[in-house]
Structures are given as C-alpha cells and as structure tokens.
Length: 386
Image (tube, rainbow, N blue to C red; front, side, top):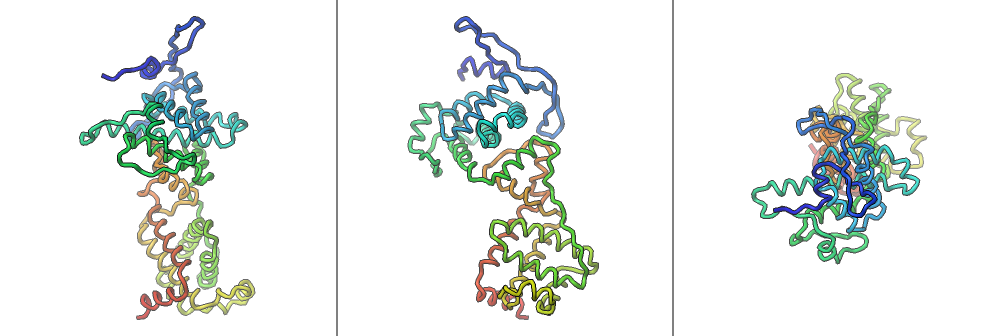
C-alpha cells in the first residue's frame, strides 16, 4: 500500500497547510474559491472552482520560478515533482496562468525565469502524463516512481554541469531522465517561439495564423517578378530562408489564383524560354551579381518551382503555416510539450496545417542551394532531357 505524507494527502484533497503559532499545529484552509472553466478530454467546457491567487497557487508558482532561475538544481526539480504529482492538469494550467499574469513583477528579478518557468511547467505535465500512461500499461512491469533526492544523486552523479545527457536503457527513471533532458534543451530553443507559444496558451487575443502575402502584378510580368524573387530566395541567409520561403509560397500561389488559367506547370514552361536579361530594370538591379544571369541559376529556379508544385499537391487544401507557427511547432516537437484540448491543438495540428510538407519543401530548397553547379546540371539533364 502506498504511503502518503501529510503534504501529499493535503494535495489530494486540494487543501493548503497554514502553520499556526504553536509548534506542529496546522490549520487546513480550503483552496476553492471562484468558479471558472476548463476543457475536458472531449473538448467540452466544464465548470471547476478556480485556485487562482490562492496561497497554494502562489507558493507553487514561486517554486517553479525559483527552479527556473536554478535550472541545473536536481534537488529543486525533485521537490517540485513531489509537490505536484497529485495535481490535476487544469490546476497546473492555473499555475501557468498565474505566472503569465504576474510575469511583469518577476521580470525585474530575472528576465527569462517567467518564460522558462511556463515551458518547464509543460515539461512537468508531459512527465506526469508519461508516468500515468506507464502505470496503466499492462505490458509495463513497473510504474516509474519519482526519485528521491538521494536516488537522484546516486543515479545522476555523472551529469555534467551543462546537462550533456545520453539515453541509458538501464536507467531506473527513464521518464525523469527525459524530463531533465527536455529541460536542459530549453535554453537552446528559439526565444521568440517560446514567447509566442506562451502568448497563444494564455492570451486569447494572440494571433499567429498566416497573414497572406498578396500579388499585385500582371500575368505578363510573372516571369520577371518571380525569377527575381526566386533568385533572392535562393540567395537568402540560412536563418531567414524558411521565413522567406513561406512568404514566397503565399505570394506565388496568390499570383496563380489571380492570373486565371495559369498553373505551376505552365509557369515552369514559360521559364524555359524566359530571358532575364530583357528587363533593363533587372540588369541595373543585379548588375553586380555574376550569378543572376547564369544557366545554372536558371536551372535552380526551375527546380524550385518543381518542388513548389510537388509541395502544393501534397498539401491539398491545408494552408501553409506562418513562420511563427512553424517556430512554435518545432519547439513543441523538440521539447515534447503536451497541448491543452483547445484551439491551440488546431493551431499546431498536422491535419490542419502543412507542417510536415513544408519541412520537406524546406529541406529540398536547402539541398538545392547547397548543391554545386555540376550536380544541378546532371540532375537537370536527367529530369528534363526529354
């Protein structure tokens, strides 16, 4: 039979201990206050009693903030796990909401701690979900206990200060190991993605869905306009490529939509006979660029539109995510963050947006840029020799 400490029993009944003046005297104060709502597993809104701004919420929030400021302290992490192990998911959401609402007051103490604290909270949620699933799995021989501080010191004595972790199949605490690994990766993730994701979770007015790039040119100018845009794209900095590629997808597809009876296949056919040196403006704009007018560049650009055509077919009716969405999506995947059953899941759902298809297109574009002229020549001849 499982033994419970006084603190864990209090957590079970959602009450907080208030130590009175006399030694070992504890007054039990109910935490329930005002009603709010949470989303159940079927996505329906259900009433529950909010704990926001109660001593328990404030205490747990402060502990997570403190751990976020000392992220390599295993003892503090284990203490958090023991404190929160019986807490329901919507209670954890309320802790996150409290940290988000009060983040300005914490920013003065530690600029990144509030942000890290909320991401850590979602890492903790994933850990608790994993343990719960393990305990329900019939094929699993043992459910994983939360390590004690002594066990953690013993099992993780070889952890480096920088958390350079590698998987160990014999580890007695695999879920805990994955948790520490995920937390150690937070500092390596895109900061803007973290802030955008947190805003999406706690600010209903936050909108990171695509803002469509519109085409304002004419059909007869398509080759001039998009040859130049394509050249700029394949010449972009690596860090900006995915953002430029998303903008390019929306602009080109909007151009095809506005120029009736036009397709990517027809556009590629027009590119074969297109001579970029005809435009005087183009000559002046790219006069200093030796690569703009070369045959190899033209072949790369034709390849780019072939990849785009394949991408559009794979997406079907799914829209391309915005660059902010794509950043958040990668953050969620990298840290294995669980999402609440709300509009957030739709925002980062592969069935709603073409995240996977775009990742393939981005890789193909990167490979296209990295390939040497000889490789481009060989591949082009194989594809278009007929």
